[in-house]
Image 1: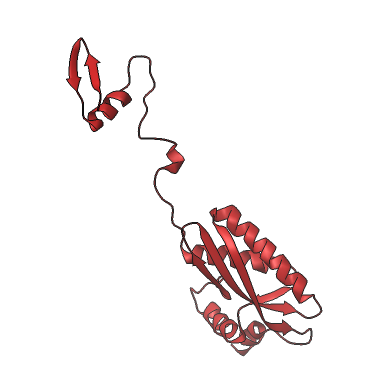
Image 2: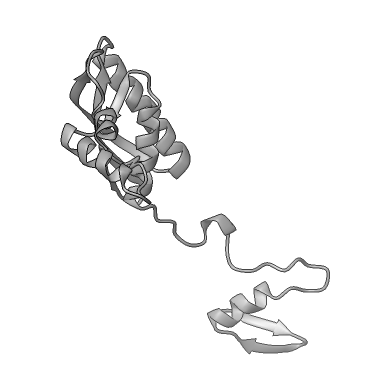
Length: 166
């Protein structure tokens, strides 16, 4: 604590009073509120689902990725997409674990026949890491990719078969 002089009298100020006195604007001085940069006040939390959506969209953008998710999840997803009011699930095949400053992702993909799986996996990692880090500010510590199937040229999509049956 320090002695404060105001108008010739000396008074002992407590810390909150000292801070208040120091932040009180004087004539010609700008008003300063709070402490520090406004961007650092408070905390931002990002839900797992947000990171999953970003990663899912980024992975689908890669040439050679035919679909996301396992055969069973794609089948259920195709049925769910047909329900009135249902929306396409961009998080299908994506699982995220989000911490305060880092995230880890697990992706399950189906690749097109004839593409290099190693190249597609590398491109997916690069695209997903770039999108998630740019949009969330989180550090992506790992992107695990499981290739669950290969789409052959003569195979029909399960989703196309589902629409024909209805």
